[in-house]
Image (cartoon, rainbow, N blue to C red):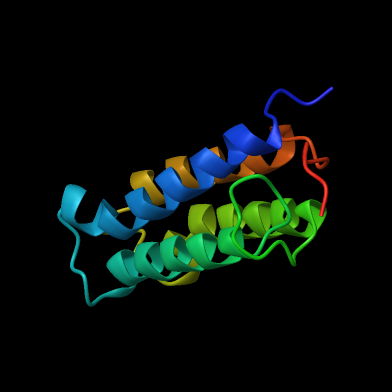
Length: 118
């Protein structure tokens, strides 16, 4: 049994997506460098695919929940590894690593069956 239902996950999607987009300001990162841009790109992408996911808080319900959760895990892995992949680990890595782990965890702990019908 998974700990997070799809409706709760939907709220987390939008909250985390917005948080990722404001993270460069919160963590005082250069918004034009990879350490800031990775937050913008992943935050905006999460909001977009959330709007198209087949779950309670979606507008279009086109993407299966299993695909959404897979995208969350991939995004989390990329975010957690981005300081080393993109070469800025000497400047900052902890926010990326922790938020990436949070994304991975949410993806793995959420049920893939929404309580809605199309």
